[in-house]
Structure formats: structure tokens, C-alpha cells
Length: 207
Image 1 (cartoon, helix red, strand yellow):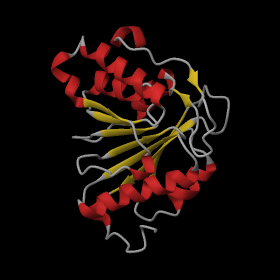
Image 2: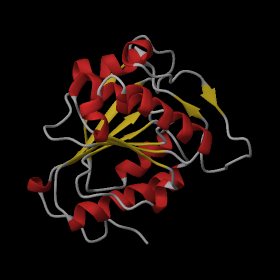
Image 3: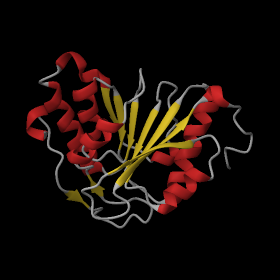
Image 4: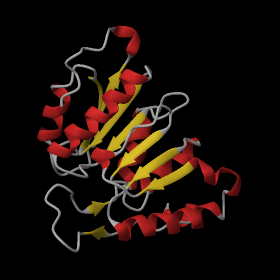
């Protein structure tokens, strides 16, 4: 798939200096993405945000298959630089669509969620503490601009699931099991916020 769409997203990358709250880079397997989208459909008009996007595989895959625009958030400077190189290479094949993919190098927990962003993807890029802060940013955005939203967790650790269960704005609506996986975490979970089903609790966002 990398060769087909003109990118390079294989390998694993650790931080040069330890980052206690940020994990190493590892791409979601293409096989897992194929299984996910055989069972799950991105909502109409989605804009995807991949936190800890690494080299951008999920964004390029979704854009290539479904023409879904997206933004990748990546803190590691080497991975960010490689993602930009992939964007340039991908753009040589899809010039008219390249503006639909963007990359940002910044701390995810400090980033302001944009009102056009509706689907948020996580493959355990950071600690559950940072995840809670990122989720708070998502909730703040949904409070400011009401809209449906979905969170996709790949290989969801129990610490992430605990954070999601404590957030009343989202509910678990779908699990996509990966029968070829080797561990109990080999699955996707889709958590959804539907503003038409109820009011947003005042206690949702934590300081």
C-alpha cells in the first residue's frame, strides 16, 4: 500500500531522549485498517484528526480510499519531517487534493481543536494523563460548536478505556475485533457523541 500511494510509513521510532508521557512511533497495520473499514464507515463530511500520527499512514490511507481530509498531530521532529516528505510525495500523484491533508508539530494537550474536526484517531500515542487533557480539548470544542463527533481507539489500553468511560459525552457504539491478532487489545473501539441525544453535562470538562 505504501508503494501504491507513494509514501513510506514502515518501521518503529523511539524518542532520542526519554519522554515519559509520549510513546514511540509505530504505524497502524494496513491489515487492521482494512478490517476496520470493512466494518465501520466514516461519517459523512468527516474531517479526521490523527493524534501522534507518526509518518501519516492513517491520514493518507483514509484520503486515498475515501477522500476524507485530515490533520496529523505529531510532536517528534523526525517523524514530523518524514510526514511532510510523505505529503510531498503523495501530492505528486494527487495534486488537486493535497491541500486536504495537513501536519502540525505541537503538544497534543495544548492544541486547540478546530470546529471542522469531527473524527479523532488514537493509537496510544501518549499517557492516559495526556489523553485526558486532549479529550478535554475535544469536549471544549464540542461545547463551543455543537456537532456529532467520534473517537476511534486502536489497541485500546484499559487506562484509555477508563478515561472514556468517565466521559459522559461519549458512548461506546462499536467494537471491531481483529481475529488475527495475538492479544486482547487487538481491536478498535468507536466512541460517539451525538448532540441530539442529550445535553452536555456541565461537569464534562475538568480543570
